[in-house]
Amino acid sequence: MAVFKAYMRIAKKNMWMILMYLGIFLGITVMFQHFTGNETTQYTAQSIPVGIIDEDQGEASKSLIRYIDRTNEIIYLEDDRETLQENLFYRNVEYIVRIPRNFMEQCILGDDKLEVTTVPGTYSGSYVEQQISNFINFARCYGAAGFTEHELSEAMAARETAQVQMLDVNGNGGSYPAYAFYYRYLPYLFLCVLCYVMGYILMGFRRGSLPDRMSASAVPARRQSMEGLLAAGVIAAVLWGFCSLISIAFYNENFLGSGKVTWYLLNSFVMLLSALALSYLVGSLVKTSNALSGIVNILSLGMCFACGVFVEMDLLSSGVRKAAQFLPVYWYEMANEILMDYGEIVGDVRNRLMGAIGIQVVFAAAFVCVTLAVAKKRQRGS
Image (cartoon, rainbow, N blue to C red; front, side):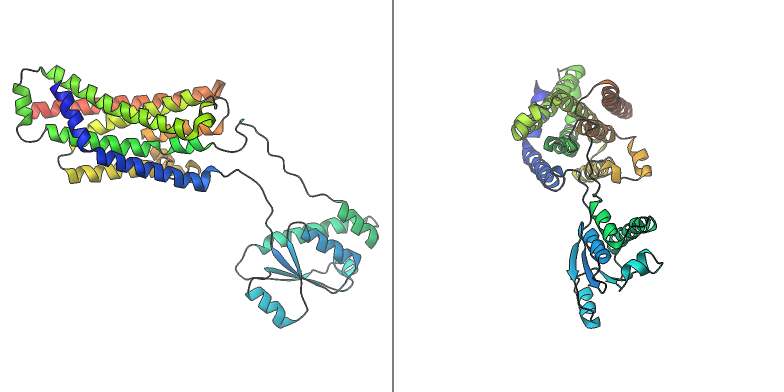
């Protein structure tokens, strides 16, 4: 087991790097989880400080003020130019409405428009403008029906604000569990650690006269390859097992009681196989540590940004998403998105999930084939 022990010895020398990337991974997970993990999709109206100058003081004008006050903050202002400019400048108000005398006759029964002032370059006033437009339209309908000002005011007060009810279509309650974000960033750790470790190991075995001595040794080449694969598998399995135990320890009952533990573990294990096969390919190609660092950074960060690890899938352009489909991390994240979006994995959802996992297996096999082709070409060249 000389080859196996040599693999382990080199991996042990790079333990500091493994711990460093593990720390980076946990830090990224905690940071992103803090900003996005506890968010639940909610719909709330935009509240804006609205200045009111009520010259009418009638029931219709007060009805308009109450209507605006449902979702905004009402601030009564004096009809003084300097005072109005000062409040707009310091953002005490973002929108000012001047209600003229005879508001009912001029603006509701008539065609006059309200005089309004808003902060230049802001869009917030459009919300208030839409509310005022809605009020005027409703009020004109009541006025056309012969309602008096008092009856119109009561009718507008009786109108209720629409209530929004969120439907739990996918069974996840409209929110994402914290452990889903943990598994979302896992490819970054797998790619960095395995590519670095396997890169240093394979470079070490090609250094100096070591390849010639291994060829002349009594240990058959087949056994050397098997011991190397066994060592790589052990390193990858330890990394995967450690990360899985961390997720169980961190999220405990929430994770174990989700009913999707097996799917998360399977998806992460298949991603591990793709990362391991890719790391073998990288290690077979690089010759120096500087080249290894450059390639690993480009691969890990490039894949993670383009495939939805660090940037949500919905924020990626269609071109980026189409290109990312040729990378295994994209399909890992697709599977992870399915696990996040749906409370139960059955029927068509299960088929989609298995398809994403299966494509990752194909990528792993493709990386292995390319690695074998590179190794065979190198043997012929030597």
